Length: 78
Image (tube, rainbow, N blue to C red):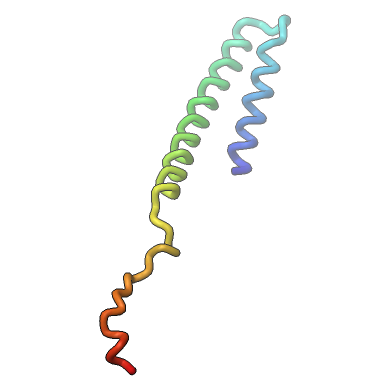
């Protein structure tokens, strides 16, 4: 998760850089391109994380995986 947070911080820095009015157009375009690539990669990562969460949320709990006891022959054991 640290890697994702670092990428988010980088994206925020790129966003701040592109807001600079004195930035040459070519440099602004390069920063924009970096930001788009980074954002698309992060979007894929988030999608994978969301899929994992859905799988985990839909898994049956291990606590409820007990064998049913019918108690049919408990009287015979005494």
